[in-house]
Image 1: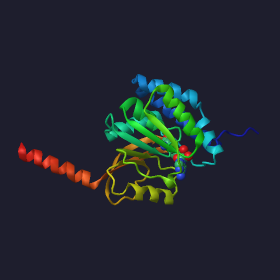
Image 2: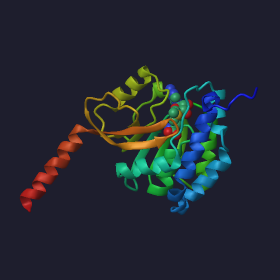
Image 3: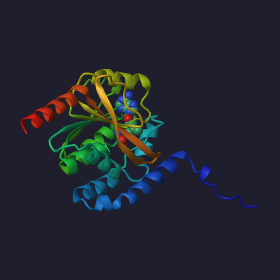
Length: 230
Ligand SMILES: C[S@@+](CC[C@H](N)C(=O)[O-])C[C@H]1O[C@@H](n2cnc3c(N)ncnc32)[C@H](O)[C@@H]1O
């Protein structure tokens, strides 16, 4: 007797790849509207054909790998109101899609931190080829030290709690604004807000923006004094 096909039997990694392709197609109008993004999308699909990034991660025993799709990166950075010339550090970058979008579309200077050497080497040759301000470095996040970047992006999949705690300790008291998916870091010196829910291959996920409290106070003071002058 013929067995009926069931979506439940499709292996998880293949499902994730299919979702990523579906999200790419859904975001295509946004990508086509920006020539720099189109160029980046072509170069990325050449460097990482369908499934390559997942295989690289699996080979390095990174079981919980996932990526921020290009059009999602575009939406997140637009919603965060990043400005040209600002710096952004992507923690646990994988192929570094968000950093590459940040540099090519928004004029950000980016540092992509990743422990898998393959991603670091490919990322650096890709950004050099495209002439983008993105540098990939190999580092374990457990030993990461803050360098005072304007922004940090953390895609919170597969980052264990002790590493998240370490990142939170490093970022406490800094002026860095933090974008993180799924859940915010525990940083008492920063306020937390949600900038929206965005599509990932594992569903629509909230993205949090954490900003230093004193930056908000400074904003309020300058607003008050400009109101008084007015
Ligand atoms: C969920 S993926 C996110 C990739 C990328 N940020 C994105 O949004 O498309 C997490 C990445 O973090 C890296 N990673 C996990 N733990 C790490 C650690 N302790 N040090 C450095 N990189 C780490 C993994 O190798 C993987 O590439």
